[in-house]
Length: 340
Image: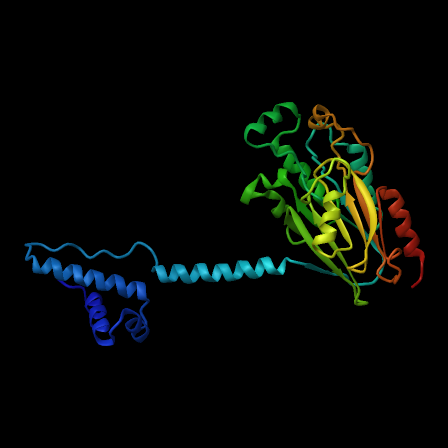
């Protein structure tokens, strides 16, 4: 017995000449019409063989391929717009008052040698002034995976405890911008940091380019990354210098990852900018990898404080960075005491 829908498909193609025109005319997806036409031809063949039985007509077990194609197309368009919207993430400040961002280097908060003395001191500075906001350059936790999971045997904090500590840190730092480092990204699609950040902060994997806009129509651009491409054993800011000369036209280029720190200011004549290049050391006090490789153990630069005064037209006074958050806070307090 020939299925009615299959016969209708045959008649439509016969009438309109092609599957495409028949599909447009009767409003049935081309893939569906093509499948029904094949089923009709198969049913005719079965009938011509004059078998004493007929096989059941089976429905497809999924949506039509045309619908899948349409959905994939829509998803691509959505994802493309999403990526393009993040080229420069716009943060709009409600006033032109001076404020500061404290960029924390890699916390590795569950590590046995996380420097709690300095970490708590920096968090207390954030919370001492409602115009200081915390930012992180990634590697919140060790998050050992694969063959590195054996290193959990060398630290006191379990994975469960590590997540509690990370959540505590994010809650304590008044977050504005959070960057996930390689240790964080090892969690894959199930990264709990994204859940912890929620909608209260910018949360990006590896890097973020942020433009902070002010009511007086000025802005500050920041290119923050867990790390930037390029390395020199003679210059800790080689990657930032390279990025400044060839890439994003920012006021600050900052990263972490390598557990060393450096800070410099430079003028880029072509871009007509005075910019800062920075690398934050982080809070891992004793690094066994660095010890084995013979790298020196630095004692400062765990965080970099960026102080911004959008009221100033002087490029030097408008935007300053400090390797000592205490000094940066004193500069912010000075600016806050000044009338516009």
